Length: 107
Image 1 (cartoon, rainbow, N blue to C red):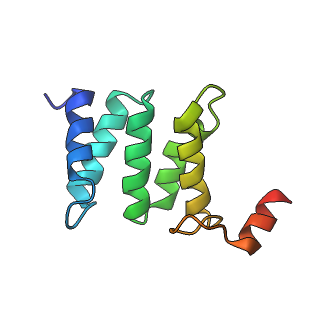
Image 2 (image 1 turned 60 degrees about the vertical axis):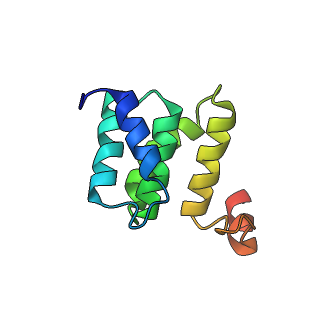
Image 3 (image 1 turned 90 degrees about the vertical axis):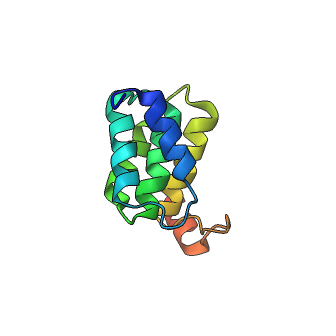
């Protein structure tokens, strides 16, 4: 069922980390999942990861910012903020903070 968000979410998750991930089909799967269920944090996070890995920072940020700013987002909001920080160069891939960027982010 091409409109079933759960099927799309599971396909996206199953491809994560596979050789060549994310390819154009992976991004299309995540986009369709988001269109079907934009309210699900798992979809926003999965799609955000995929679009960042593909180098599409603008799309990733557009998906992640509403989740990061959700007042009751909990762990999903924190994860989204970490991805945003990484996309903005505040946090390195290894999890450490870039001192120059971290100082600028708090100003």
